[in-house]
Length: 342
Image (cartoon, rainbow, N blue to C red; front, top):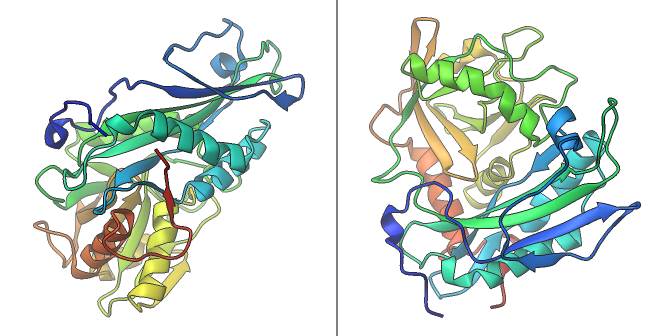
């Protein structure tokens, strides 16, 4: 198939309108038949629930061209399951997981010309999302919703290689202990924006949010989970009910334990012990792992032994293995790679 004429290595990480997107509507207690459309505009009432009470959830995943030329996505069934959990928390009707995967297949196949070629470092980013379209004026769940899925080609997150970043311990709280921090909803990301802009204004790349109850335990950043490595190469994952369950993090944990043979601990991680770790990374769909070289706690610098020049040894191995599975150069666990028939 002939690809769209783009400079794949320089397209950046942003939005480019592609040919088709998927839409399905929920009305009268059931999901209607989904459809592909060229229309990228969303039209809702001025009184739609999304505009007033923020009933909106979303997911993020990617499609890749493998070394042998196949077009694949990475664990879309897990994204579908997570979206069901998000919907239930916000009192929205879950979009059926099998239809979620079908929507992914249809959108990727319809936009196959936009899937970047193997070796460019680029990928096709997929954004499934759902929001309240029904009219609501009193505080309550809406009765009508829309599920949509669009895609856009994105360049490599780290142009020129992944350089360790500097983050700060935030003065702001991301989520309450029994709140919605574990849900992938727009409202959670909106609440992190002020902290994000403040961190950037002070010269930092990201925030380290602590638990809001005691402000002593590491939670996550505004858009990624933490991963730490001890000096004896044990992988340590912060555990909390208000951390979003990252699919990338879960995949890296499996790789660490079952492919690389590393010990893994998922437990509460105190800020006080961060200085004793050898490596630190931020896990997410966009970058897989963003290495962290320095953490600043109100003027006190915590410099990771892995340094500010490159990823730590274990972090790099985890990154290379997951990327290899996604691109078809390494055999991954059964079911992780979902091939798209074009």
